Image 1: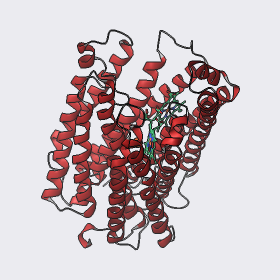
Image 2 (image 1 turned 30 degrees about the horizontal axis):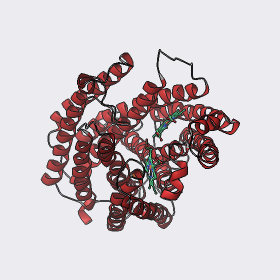
Image 3 (image 1 turned 90 degrees about the vertical axis):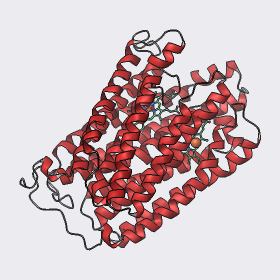
Image 4 (image 1 turned 45 degrees about the vertical axis):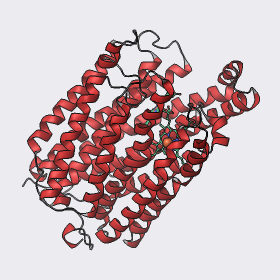
Length: 485
Ligand code: HEM
Ligand code: HEM
Ligand SMILES: [Fe+2]
């Protein structure tokens, strides 16, 4: 075994070696997401910027598809990270897993190149197959869609086979059931219908049911594992929380789907169903905050990895505010009538995706770096620990600043465009020319740069953290081993 602080693959098990590959691609795509977001933001301020070269539609598409794909890579990596540890058995089919990783990565690169090269063109059957399916967030062309399904099936097989061969912990069981739902739902977004209402109906099955049901359960499992690892919380406690959270999440999130069926031509009963159930959705998110804070407090914040605990707590709060509070604000149909189609939505979309998902994947990046460097010390008085603290701060200041900029713009649009001007064509333009809107867009851009600075610092930190550390990981007086579950 190499000396402490040295990056050495021998420190990792098979699943973890594969995980760091997924993490690397995820991190690069995160950078691409930021770059295209900044370009799209500049086009809001100057619509002529790059017009005809890199259109807003393309920038925006690459921005949000990169987001979905980097989070998926982050989740797959995180599951491979914990798999052998939880199952107590080497990953079954690791060679196939590696092959699929390369195929998946190349396919993503090919899809992005095509997006950039073919920016406009006729909407024919061949465009759907080869260029772009036109479904926001999951715009991959049909050939890639099918490829993604194959890749995910292989991943699923590896996970199930490994748990079956080893053992099923509570986290393992929930994870497997969740992956069935997560992969199954993707299929709902693969069948194009020319009727826009029908198409949107199914498209939301992927988008909403992913982020408000299956992804939430996925991060519940990841948070549970991170808390066991860094705090040494008793598995029984963590898994009991997990079951409660999952029940509440599915209980409210599935019918909460109705909050997207208010204005797309679906029957009116969705007003009641969507309004009621989605209003309950913040409850499991409160439970997650209580869970993280309670466990940290019970262990007097004594932990073996400060950045992981920091990002896990950021996740619990970010999920609660971004999804729970910002989602709740516009989820009742009476309110959504005024906020729909304004900057209110991206204000919520940014805070929720960052707060709920980016945070926990970043926590896993740090978990990986610690072990990769031979399980080094990452608790108090770590060399260069200003870097993780400052990148956490800059990313949060940047994100919250952007979200507030958009919220002010969204308020103004709801007020002028919707309430005063009655959603007329004229009102739309009046609202967009209003100084409050324009200033909000400027603030979004300025804080976007702050966010980008946080990303650069995060990259630097992840590459160097633990490098000069010679102390071994802090010992926890807990019980993290699955055997005692
Ligand atoms: C982490 C979980 C969540 C994420 C990542 C998320 C993300 C998003 C995104 C990106 C959109 C815009 C979709 C589009 O392009 O049209 C959206 C819409 C919406 N979200 Fe969420 N959301 C989450 C949870 C919630 C929760 C818990 C609620 C309610 C309590 C909620 C309420 C809404 C509503 C009402 C809309 C529709 C806005 C409109 O079109 O008028 N979201 N969400
Ligand atoms: C670095 C700074 C960023 C800038 C300047 C930026 C800018 C933008 C812009 C201009 C849009 C299009 C909004 C519209 O169509 O009205 C957008 C959409 C979006 N961005 Fe970002 N973004 C940034 C970072 C992020 C991050 C870090 C995340 C998530 C982790 C994110 C998630 C999203 C989502 C979910 C949407 C679609 C929202 C919706 O349709 O409601 N962005 N972004
Ligand atoms: Fe939703």
